[in-house]
Length: 221
Image (cartoon, rainbow, N blue to C red; front, side, top):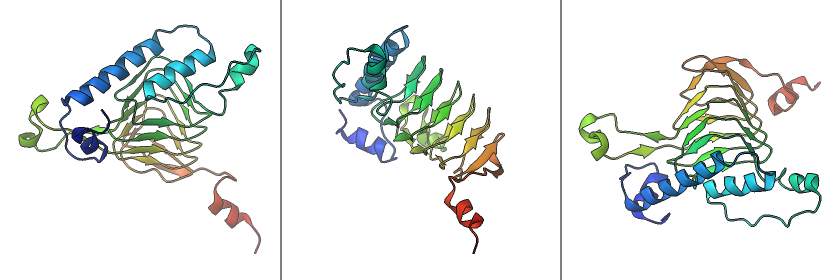
């Protein structure tokens, strides 16, 4: 499935046929995995991680069950994010999320190309990440008969994204930055900055000891 010609075109950001049988099969696999995750109800952390990994096609074995419930829950703190249903992911195999990250409900991800979210990221509800694109030329686009494309999306470590944010294809949000609620992010956000409005623009720099440039500036000569 993931070695087909159309799959490789898609990952490379080239025009590809979205109706390719292998791509359709994986989208269906991912949709069914999302449905199972969303309909699971009140389940243990272990079961939730298992369902989450099914969405991503993550085949890592789960650690052995710890007899103490609380200790068993802790086994996943440094391995998987916390994800609130419902969510909708297109392919799953191209979606990577770091540990100690919280993904709030109504997350929508079009992971045509790689969509990577780092560690300790916080997201508000109704986040949409659109990694898919279409040709601007309607003669090439041709509705559902034409090709599609995509660009990677990267959200680096320690980012906070407010509710109802839209992130477009090709965007990188730098480490430690904050995106205000309701923003549409159309271009790169530098590390340790606060951006907001539509289209998102820099409002100010975030003052933090985590920023190496600020640490250097505060050191006496």
